Amino acid sequence: MLEALGLRKSFGALEVTRDVSLALPAGGRHAVVGPNGSGKTTLFNLLTGEIGADAGVIRLAGRDLTGLPPDARARAGLTRSFQRNNLFPDLTVRENLGLAVAIGKRWGGVFWRPFNGMPGLGDRIEELAQNIHVADSLDRTVRTLPYGTQRQLEIGLALAVAPKVLLLDEPTAGMSAEETRAMTALISLLPREISLLIIEHDMGVVFEIAERITVLDYGSILIEGTPAEVRSSELVRRRYLGESVP
Ligand SMILES: Nc1ncnc2c1ncn2[C@@H]1O[C@H](COP(=O)(O)OP(=O)(O)OP(=O)(O)O)[C@@H](O)[C@H]1O
Ligand SMILES: [Mg+2]
Image (tube, rainbow, N blue to C red):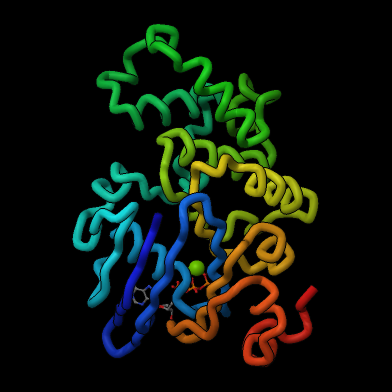
């Protein structure tokens, strides 16, 4: 579904992405891990087109996206999770999801039209709310929601455009243990029509979600394999996981 071949990126003399390739099958769950500064977020920026690659090819469902701007890649089905500051804090959860669906469908003049004039919108909002486990908070104003629930809503906004591939950059960052459990459960239960690429520092979360793991180190792939292969790799143990392997 998503294929990256030989991606390279330097910032000045600093090589941040060195010949990185990965292949995410349809419905796959693939994690990218590595120490701070190893180039994980840069890899996402290269995939979404926010940063142009110096070399390499990116394909989505067989279509060459290399060189396309971010909005064209998003329309092709490659979406990253919104950040919390993309939410409308004074609108309700329902209104935030509704706007995201409407924008995804490019319904013109959405800001000036009542939601009930848009066919199927109510059902779609309910479905999204179920997916992100906020069905009981639909009419709450976003700013009154706990941090963890706001982060769940970010994922809902990304899902609203029905992506083929969803990129999540540290979805549990800053969360309590309880919020992390809720987020992990939510991600585990996302529909398999969506292929997932996830950057995550919490290895407990990674081992629960991922079917394959790419370990980055100074911009290069240290190892790519199944969770069992990564867990048992002496190299990874020494370079990254240390004693924290669950
Ligand atoms: N736009 C940029 N200009 C210059 N250097 C950059 C730029 N973006 C990232 N870098 C550098 O590239 C390296 C990789 O950064 P990146 O954000 O991709 O790492 P990361 O693996 O996501 O780290 P973290 O775990 O802290 O989020 C870092 O040394 C960073 O300072
Ligand atoms: Mg990062």
